[in-house]
Length: 492
Image (cartoon, rainbow, N blue to C red; front, side, top):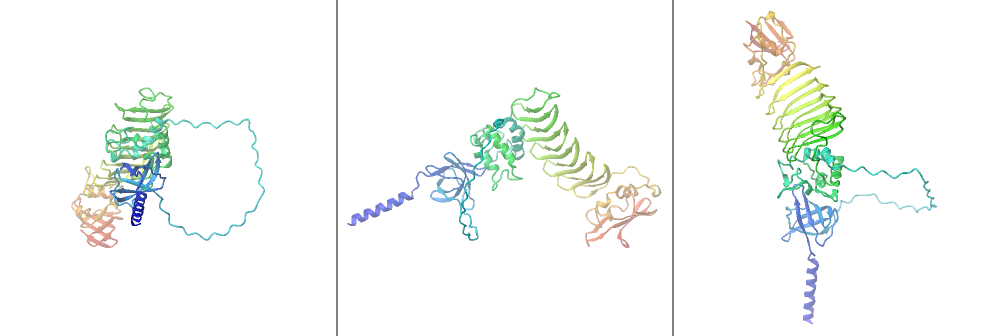
């Protein structure tokens, strides 16, 4: 009797172990490190989108993967970072599907009892009238894959992806400029699914709001993602490898797109024409694959936004055009990415406040334009000090002086005995011609002194501010500088 009891206990223990052991567990088969995605083989298990799978290594729980898309016996997943304690590795065991995380319960008011249904006689369905003139719907136009890639998809990849996944840098061992990679480097056709474009890893990463690609800047617009889907559905073909027109300039009535390539295949340029005139996008690329420039044309004239890049991928300048003329903001950058200058135009005419900066970010020049006429200039050296303009030969006789009406002195942050722009230290002993060139016509004058108002002068030691300065002259040179507010004077 004791022996039978012992056998029953042993059989029960073996049955528990058999039930606890997983049947043919799944494994992690591939990691898209640059995309933040994981591919798992489910073995004999099943799953669905949104299901969670435990990851184990050496019997220890590493974390959980959440299924994004299914692909035959494979599943593409994201890592649940809220429950994971380590990084998954290829070969890790994948557990059976767990239900998705339960959403927090929402409070809702008690339901009211429904009134009994009221029976109504069914209404007779109207019979459709025959239409002898009806015609079947016209089929959708076939997508021109190479043209779609050249005009829409590649400009998107060039702007948003090639800098990190191009010939200069293969982040995550991915080069989108190649169809198939070499060795560990993968190409674009290895991150797209030609059978079901929506299951493409490229689409997953471009539309993931939790970990967007590209990581900086706005996500692609739905219309842009749709264009990439259409291109994949068309077989993800490369751009045309021959010119769409004979070599040379297109004829006077040509309408279409011209493609040019460097020797060996890399794209060199693309231009759209309408009846022989440039109309639409015109783009060029460097031999390394980075975009060189992109402009928009309307009936042969520049119209809209235009941009030009350095060979390292940094933006060089950006301008706005209207009917072939600069209109709006023009800005350019130093090769290190620092803003170099900013200008404004009104239909080709210089306008407003123009500014320029040294490569270290400090201001170098400022101009004021009114109706195309320069009305003021300030220049600074690389250390931030004001640079004085060059002066030609001038008669120092006060009675013969004709001061310039244009002045930039009101825009200078003057100081009293300060380390920079010290008005009381710079000008004593300087010729009258210099005062005229820097400050322009005086607000009040006598044969012995000139007075200027509406200035910004600060004493850095006391933080006291002054708005007026008087230069007193002797023998054609400044003998004394006086800063003051109304009747309060401080002499230098």
